[in-house]
Each structure stands twice: as structure tokens, then as C-alpha cells.
Image 1 (cartoon, rainbow, N blue to C red):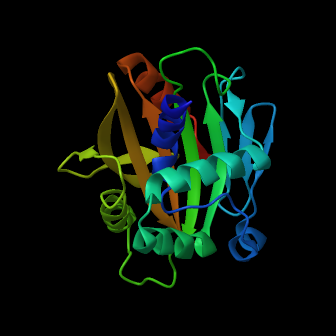
Image 2: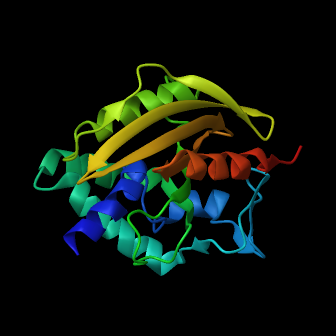
Length: 217
């Protein structure tokens, strides 16, 4: 059970700066979006994401449960870090969390994609995705698990919008988990995608999903 929670944590460490969406202020403005026939849509961002039909999306209750577990694993006994995470919840929304396999499947690692949004209009110094990723990295480094981040942040076009990207990896037991954090500032929010995987084949599958992301004009 502890190992399973650590694997869940690797997915949710991506969400250090988000919450389960239980706060009303950002939700009323941007909404959770909808997922129908494997297509996620969010009208505020004019965003659509086509997912593989056999992937598994978490409902609101499942997101809350996993975020509660992840939050404890992240903060541990640190009151300072807990206060930072609690404060960030006021401006953050977990829009979408999907896994390749059902949670609890008997596999070494379950690849995941998370889509998040955090209000940053109150922070004028965050002008682009790389600024946001800088703060995300610093916050993750305060946590209990040691991450290795790439030195460079680069850009990738997703649906016609330039996202800044931070690569990272972490060892959990004998498993090396790789992550890519994508962020762009859109309409006063940092919109982010986080993919978590262990093989080149899994990464290619995620890149295909991102290649089909659409931002309607």
C-alpha cells in the first residue's frame, strides 16, 4: 500500500500547486469542463483534448481522495509547506486527471496526464509559462522526495499556443519515473499539462495526445 501511494504521489507531485477543485472562486469562472466520448472540453480556454478511448478519467470524488493522499505525502510534517499548499488551493483547479490503466492495476507504473489551471493575474511577475515553472520547481524541491530537473526550459507548440516545458525525473524504488511539465499563461491563468511515464513508447503516446489538443479560435 505504501508503494502504491508513492506511485500516486509521483502523479500528484505534479499538482503541488493545485487542489482538487473544491474552492468556488476559480471554479465559477472557468468550470471543470466536460468529458464525453473520450473528448475533454473547457469553454473558458476554448480547449479540447481527445483521449484514447480505453483510458480512465477520475471523477471529482476520486480526484479529491487522491489529492488528499498526495498533499500529505508532499508536505509531511512541514507546517510551512502545508501553509503554502493550503494557500495555493484558493486559486487552483484540477481540470482533468486520466490514467492509462484503472487505479490499482497490477502493473509497475500507471502513466498519467493531468491538466491544471491556476489563477496568476494577481502575480504580475509571472508573464509566461517559464516564470510559473520556476516557482513550481522551487515548491517541489521543498517536498519530501528528491527530484532531478533538467537545466533548460524549452518551448513546444500545443494546439497553436507556445507552452514552456520543464523535464524532471525521480526514482521510486527501482522505477525511474519521468515527467514533463507544460505551462502557458492564458486569460489570467497558468494552464498546465503534466505527463508522467517510464518508457519512450509511453512518451510517444502522450505526444500524440498533445498533438491533437485544440484551442478553438
